[in-house]
Length: 214
Image (cartoon, rainbow, N blue to C red):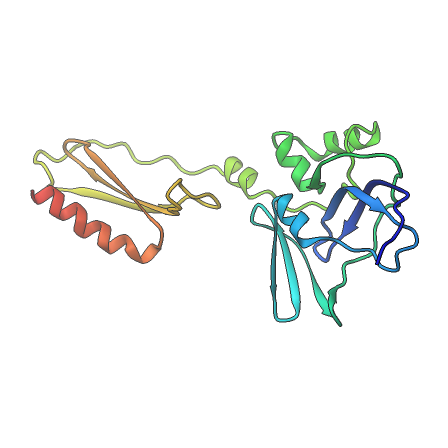
């Protein structure tokens, strides 16, 4: 089966999450009966597609983009949001949501983002559809100061402080998500261990105890 290609350009797709997916270098074939999106090309554009239970789930850098369900033999996406600009060709394929621009512009306020859209410097379909930024919430959260330390232990390992935490939404090069620290109150000597699962914390303590005893 063949179909004549009249041009190529860019279309925007809106998903169930209200995020907008920009597909570039799309072929315009007006005599073709269906609009087709290649899963392999989505993968090359760093979009993850997971197929199962008669549905496909699409994400970008761990962020949910949208999902669609199987219809006969194809997964049917929402209709294009914007008509194809024939003969306008680019090579990018990105999720042009307001949240993505917000992070890319260094967490600038949304009034500035709206102004950039107004003067047509950025292409966002809906500037009001944004989510609360957890990073900004944590950065602006004020904690009470710790009490001043008036005395320290006088012997090694008489008191050891332990702290267990995670790396939020990031991982280390070894795919580790959690870390645990052991801090000796007298010498201030600190040991840090990284691990993948939270239930490995007890194992890290056993390793620390053996190293200290040696």
